[in-house]
Image 1 (cartoon, rainbow, N blue to C red):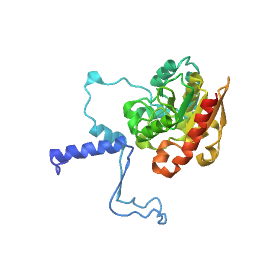
Image 2: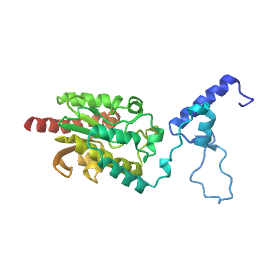
Image 3: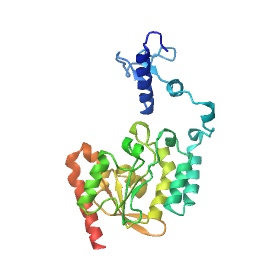
Image 4: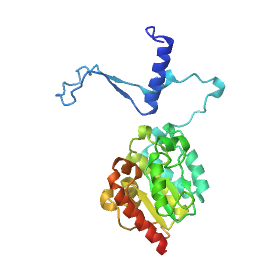
Length: 284
């Protein structure tokens, strides 16, 4: 313990540091401004003293309470050391083995190829009715979803529920999942490698659900599942095709509820997309 701190101050500082680490913070900025556009002074130049690098491993060990010897977890391989292409091939191979959604979930719970699993609290597999005609797919879970282990349960999920209700759907008549089943630290954007590793599992999930309609929530989901290159504002509003290998599923991309919370005026566009879905459901 720092001799300059009281026990209460030390405890508060330790808890604050643990919170920073949990939310993906690894750089602490001081009050002195740093000119990142200044000319390079060469390798011999001293780094700015206002930036303090935090070693996550050391900081975590300092703040983590000691574990009794009998409770020490068994050692396992670090998925971060596994090459992304090897992890992708392992994901494809294991996903193909799933004969049901229950088996697919069990496979994901034991899969060690994605580093996101190490920082997430829970696997966020799916919610709703797997026999429903409509399947919604987003990008990745957030903090609320990670805590509950269910997709779309935070503010964006509450908005999605209202959007579904407007066209006669709810979580008993729709199925909801994400491309990424584990929360990225600090809600950051998943890396291309992380998305590639998780993609075989959502593809198999869609194949096992076999819905009549697939709704991609946001640009990343549309790009990953439908192969579109344009942004979501150009992709939305039209019917597309999703091929499972055995049949064709009608698909549509729309704006992600989280985006609509930031840009409420765009809800009119999402309403048009959901109106198209309602009409298609009524016609088929």
